[in-house]
Image (cartoon, rainbow, N blue to C red; front, side, top):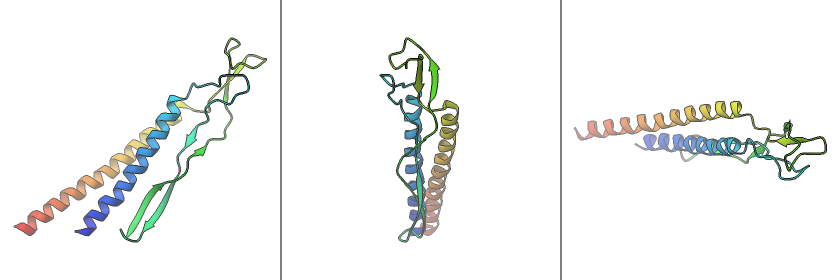
Length: 137
């Protein structure tokens, strides 16, 4: 029986990790057009979640843990908007280095991975229920 519970606990670490990943992606998307307030001020910088695979001796398996957030150090995008409060002397405004297409694809991958972990939990619960029915039988 403990193997059933261990597999659920291992899958739960994946659920937690993908939830954290989706939260970061949502923050990136929400700030995709957040320019600085003054000329020279950096706009929002894209965040990247990191993960660690950790062997859990108690569970007898590898779990996933959320690591520190990293920052995408790629260049900011610029747009010519001379009337914007953050425009520099040449009228250019720096915008975040967030690409909505990349974030959307990352979100789909996170959702699919979340669903895969959820399927493990569901299948394990079904097997556990069937095992208990057989033992009662």
